[in-house]
Length: 390
Image 1 (cartoon, rainbow, N blue to C red):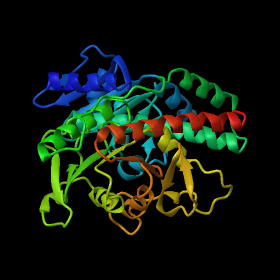
Image 2: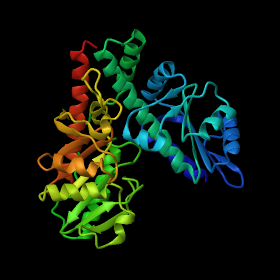
Image 3: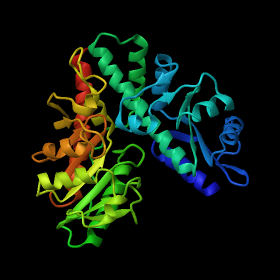
Image 4: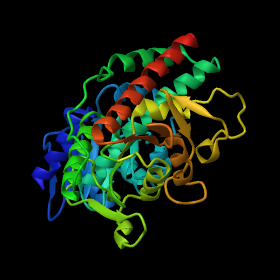
């Protein structure tokens, strides 16, 4: 257990979500194990873990820029933080805020939600099975807070609502942002001759997508088409650990492999049907692509709050089209909206959700479209801020 807890703490540090020593993880078996026995928050966290009767618990003091972002959001949303990105709507719903750092406040909030924001600021999340769930929730909370903070700033700027404190928080958060990456990984060259070759390329591209920070936690999906079979990552799989987590799904539906495949299998199949030249698809959650997809310059928009379902306005961000669509195959599923957008484009953003990119031969092209579109969205975000006088 000690090794597992330390590995997830290291992942939080590697992702830039916590400084060394600031990620406290506890696991409960016959006794409570802890990655940082001398951590000052251990007593409170351990009492909360016992009260919840969970298998694991993370209590993290986030690194910059998340610390500055959460400090500001706590002043603006002292009771509950409600981000609008897709992952939060689906999995977290909202981020409750605890008034005090205590086991009672932590456990009380975590009985109702998957994560809680505490004074400090701190983020806490349990794992009913193990520390992986806690790691994913903390990562998703950081992502959601980042998206909300930058989205709200642009919206407030557009409507003349920014405050000196908000502008100061933005400047401080921006000063901690890593620079945009212009380098690109050298991935396996296609076309791929067989399933084994395609799967090795998928493992490699998945690891690169996580390493370049183009996902929330390790979420996303990836596929490669060989003839009439789509090789696609399984639902809930880690993009950087895809070995054994790729399903071969015939496009004619003649196999039950689709039962464990990504929930976006239908969207991938639709993209391949709309663009027969596409050989692979890479889907991530780059932050500025998500932020710009949520930015609406239409005053009193009648669709505000539900634009992710069926926004009727043609929109673009970072040079890519922005389309609505829910995860899955429902009547408003992205399987209906995304394929038409990618019939003539190499990248498209699903509103509040993330970015899909295709490659004709291999993942080098798909990865380049994913990274280049995110960099363009980042530049466009700050250009919009400057144009609005921010």
